[in-house]
Length: 528
Image (cartoon, rainbow, N blue to C red):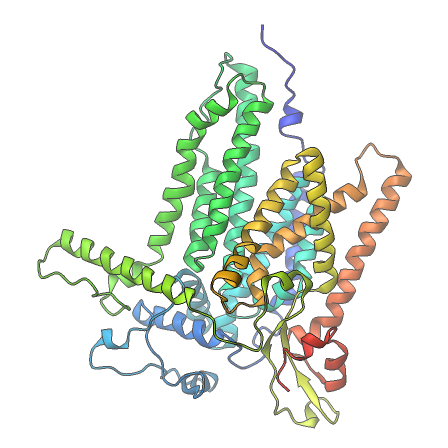
């Protein structure tokens, strides 16, 4: 006789509210975040911070399929100055195209994405920042949807999207053509796909349990499109920056643990053997082969031309397609070895550098833009300021630190899968940098934290769910919880609004700029 003790509601709890509201609410929040990111996107009309590398590499990819060397350098920004005036003659001229090959330390996908905006809107500040603003806005939508799925609450999902929209570091990187916002986007998208796959797999297990003969190992679940999509997204994260590999490894373990937990919750006699036999092979394809395919595809431009860095490192005299492929791969692997060697020795001093332990406390932000030649007439005062300060919203970040501590206690006491997933993702994006700080003394910056900011927001959302209490709680208890969560969101909004002028290069008086420097270390992060 079939055991009917397993409840589908227990394995896949329903989501509160209608499907329409489940989309309408997140879309409205994303629209709000998009307005913040797209309005005045072309300001400042300058090449901001490390845009000097990526916007030109992206343009080179559009023109030549690979990165080429440019006119000038950091001390003599000939190419940057020409771009601001609309002059696109920025490439060095070489006798052979391969002589102009530029060594770059990061994979090409993020630069291809920047290049898409340049192709659509031109080689100007709006064009090279368009893709960053777009994925920043889309990440707010994804955050709202994944928070909704994890909490089964549309209200909490919209809270997650709103908080991400109000983070200062997320805003700045969404308005700047750096790679890190694209890394964050693909990591968050991959995580969201895995959460969707968790629900999908559990629904299939429940359907099998209710209709098919029971076996010790359980069923094969077949093709899992959400997990394949997750692998592709995480491969894209690695194709933006190599640090995406930490999330890929962590999430591969996470999805296996979820599969084992689902089969055990179903009451199967051999849940672990069932997961190893039926889930792991497909998981390897999704979390190993799919990422590898996406990563290699991002290098198509390098393979398609002979002008890339190290392209002819292994040049055989024998011709033919087999030898071409073999030699190309050998040259590519040698290139990747050079990249890894480059990162291991990156320890030059920079005035904005900081240590990983200080990042959650926002002790050393990065000044992306701070011109010193503004005339007094620009703001109607004796001294004016126009700043882009790469810093998170303090109320949000400090709240996230407390929420992460709450999640640790929650996971230890209850083994809740949501707390465990958020803590693992946060650890995967933060802890590896301690190794590089100790072993390599590497030059690092606060904005390296942007891939874990969504998980800091998720920690707050989960903690807010605990504060709100269950639906069955007393009305007074729910009202007090709602007031506390609402008050926190309002504080974050006010804090963000206060910082907004120094996040978006608004021209303000020097006194107003000074008032927004909440710590002395923030002041030293801006040129004097």
